[in-house]
Image 1 (cartoon, rainbow over the protein chains, first blue to last red):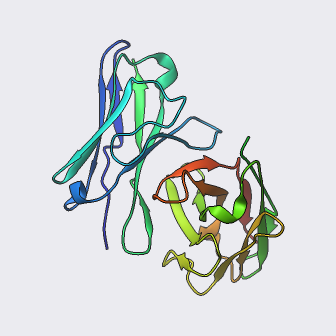
Image 2: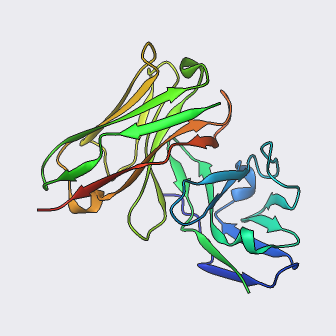
Length: 106
Length: 120
């Protein structure tokens, strides 16, 4: 079965750029979505279809997807971006989520 | 505005049953596919089940296949999850989620979740 692999944690200083990866076999051929989840809250969609943003999501959030890796990029990271981030895609009649990445703002 | 409100969670013994509901408002419910997605305490997100907008097509994760049944009532703007033969590993917050758009595979709206605890 298809597996999505995320690093457990990523740390970045305020104002810097965070990159969170999601690995999967030929993931570049699939549409990848990204969610942000803060403690005690429901997930929020921040990027869909590889690199589109829902309304209300800052331009600082962007995505890319090629080969075996999809990437969520957060520019000018702020303390409020500290959260868990999950990638997701649809594959052969099932939704798949990555294991999640905890973003820590130093 | 779009609202999804889950209910029906609680404490149940192993082998027991529970029915979750999700009341939807603020959009044309029958236009969107819906899913149930769960999160065990301290763990990541796990997709549970999906239902097409008409209800004609459903899918399940292998971990719940044969035990859970998803359904919807488009006249009542409601989504359901019948959970039977519950196990300790089914303990989680269960979210109902709506597709961002009628076509596509992302979830643009989520409820706040309902906690299911399976314990003797």
